[in-house]
Image (cartoon, rainbow, N blue to C red; front, side, top):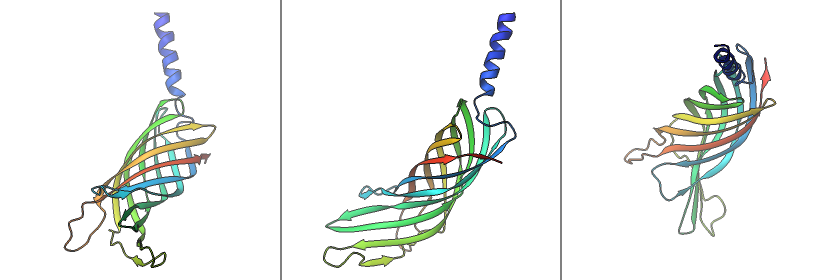
Amino acid sequence: MKKVLFVAAMMFSSVATFAQHAVGSINLQPKVGVSIANLTDNNSSDARVGLVAGVEGEYQASDIFSVSAGLLYSMQGAKAEALGIKSTEKLDYINVPIMANVYVVKGLAVKLGVQPGFKVNDKLDVKIPGFGNNVADLKAKAKSVDFSIPVGISYEYNNFQVDARYNWGLTKVFDVDNFKLNQKNSVFQITLGYKFDL
């Protein structure tokens, strides 16, 4: 019986050390990284690589569970090239990820949440050989609000955290009359952040 109690106590103590921060604590995490974005339902497009940066706050609800929310500037959209004509859909958002984080081993968390995004840039650049760099600087007519489901994983060591997540778009990006466009945002992001306990 003593052995069983000892093993149970050891298991409980190991679970209790999964999270890096004390239960009930709040931390703030500035973060910066790279966004690799594309649009679904478009086989001819290429990814647009850009910046993602912002801050997230996290509340440690239990030894293995926390909730977080943030404000992240994210460069999204897509690139395409056909017949020498290059186009870039520059769709940038302020995203608000609201995440549930489950620590499966010490410092390692899996994440799932919801994310509204608010458009801050909506531009279509078209470049045609022989006509200069920016032949067109047009509105891409993207919707002002975008919703996605972020899912990911993170690892924290000495308050530094590497976070990789995929934002699965739910909203049709464009709202153009007389066109049936079913494109949605598809975004992979990897960031490096540092957590400050409050």
